[in-house]
Length: 200
Image 1: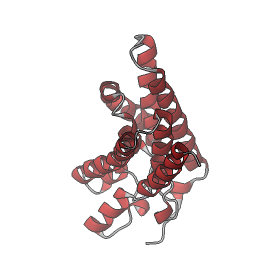
Image 2: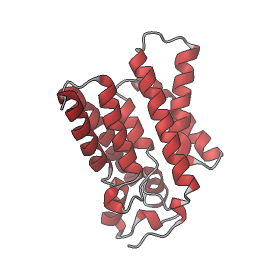
Image 3: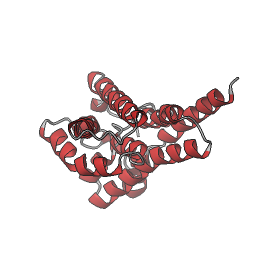
Image 4: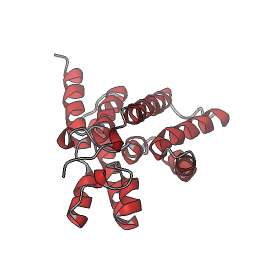
């Protein structure tokens, strides 16, 4: 087997397993003894922790979730993998976060983890549009879609200002992650996953 393909397969598996470590479930269990997936939004994400457990704990979870994505990107570069392979492997962190194998596939929406995956490539753009995207998600009562709005804002900014210094690889990665996040959140909403009670 080609060594590059082997690296991609192994890092993708590792990415999914790392993504499946639900920081919100772990932190909430340690702090309150409860399962965050049975509290208000019934969602294992940083936003639910922020709203119901505490702003500080919500920020801690958001950072930890973001580090999962960033960690995979760093490992990919250390292994000198192709850029496209790194993004594909890192996308499995997002999938694992949304559908974690360790928690019966009841996870979060992937917002903070998506930030962790893309922030090494688009740090300024992502920071600029983070708050507007969150506000828009709250206004339409679809907070889970905030990463999609956020990535769309970044893409529009790049096109409007003709930021040609950004490589085609970065633009393709942005589009891929935006579509992936949108598809994952659509599956979660249509399946009504977050409306179910989880056994504690």
